[in-house]
Image 1 (spheres, rainbow, N blue to C red):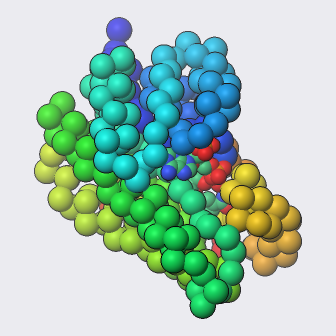
Image 2 (image 1 turned 90 degrees about the vertical axis):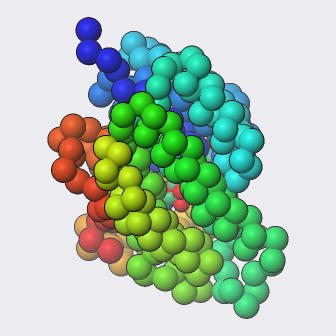
Length: 247
Ligand code: NAP
């Protein structure tokens, strides 16, 4: 029997991460599903993953903390076998608003989760995958990285631009080890993130400014993630794939 890919998905309990888990399970991956707070939501996704025949472990932890990232990968390796994939997805925006009005603790949190967290996960994945002979990483960036998001969250956009730079640099660093590193850059996707930032109607309101005339759905991003992890993308590395309805 062919060996099944083992993929770590951070922020797999909701939104884009949950959709990625379901899509990857359907594609034959076994999964380590990381989440921060909502155990019930994580277990619900894990049950749906297991119903496809895939193996799935859930691991609670804050990706901005080194020990939590190490634990996530330790458990994935121990329970499922050598990790071959990472979907670096757990992210936060903080409240919407102008930089001049932002609180230092919100800026710090966004940088710690969206940048330090991604770096810690990439570092551990690079170590594990180099040891086991290769793998693939997909960083979930944002169209905000190039749009800049004035008035909404320039600090968040800045962390996502850093994720794009991380993707390009790390793809070159890890190519010789057989590790591909790519990113997806979603536009406005209908998830709970907009309510969390204080504007649940944002996707509906934004539709008029999107060439395809609507916000995206999490499964539409999951398809791009799954392709970048698949053998069909075997010569693709260092790419930032925009999934934004043309925005
Ligand atoms: P979401 O619905 O708010 O879900 C966020 C997920 O990340 C949840 O599973 C949450 O776990 C987890 N999480 C948050 N902080 C964490 C931390 N410190 N450590 C570990 N897990 C953490 O978000 P989403 O909209 O799916 O966004 C996913 C990614 O896509 C993010 O990187 C985001 O920046 C990016 N993105 C989103 C959009 C959009 O319009 N939605 C657009 C572009 C890019 P709990 O539920 O347990 O808290």
